Amino acid sequence: MRRFPEPIQNAVASFARLPGVGPKTALRFVYYLLKLPKHDLEVMARSVVALADIKVCSTCFTYGEAETCDICRDEKRDKAILCVVEEPRDISTLEATDAYRGHYHVLGGTLNPIEGITPDVLRIKELVERIRSTDSIREVILALSPTVHGEATMMYLTKQLAPLGRRVTRLARGLPIGASLEYADEITLGDALKGRRDS
Image 1 (tube, rainbow, N blue to C red):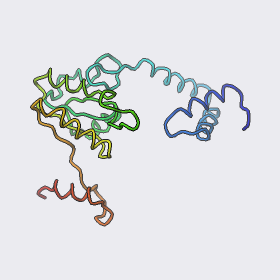
Image 2: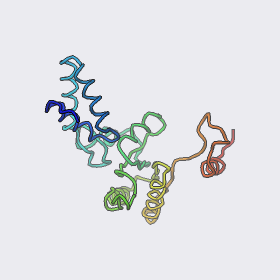
Image 3: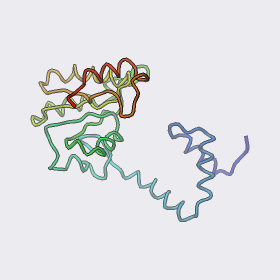
Image 4: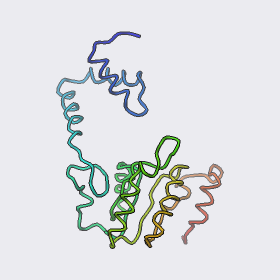
């Protein structure tokens, strides 16, 4: 393999640590950056360094600029509803719908014992304690991905939360707009039938 100057090698090694980025893609990124004007490169570098100042919210475990995030501090949000998500990025997706005005709880992933992700690795204890200590929460929405691990996590959470006497719901599932019935799998089609509504 060709020997590159040390700054290029270090940058390639750094980019290759990102998920889904191999050495060739990392090298492509570095070559792109080398073509940028010095000012643009410095702006990008400062924005990456500034990520070190981001904090994890002590209430919901998303990212923010303070110990408590903007959503948790917002008095106008509905305290009766708590939406459980896998990762902080899921909050952005839900917020973009403009259909949810409650609070969140970030688990930090889904159960996957083969990968070493067990209940004690996720923020399940914190979720149970948060619900137990907050009388205002009446509904917990499980907004996890409908994967094998997401389903297993939702089943586990439902059992853990049942003794707390709160309503536990999950996101509706079914056919996406523009989908053809012939390509739908049986589980998705079954969920669509169960979740049908008046038109």
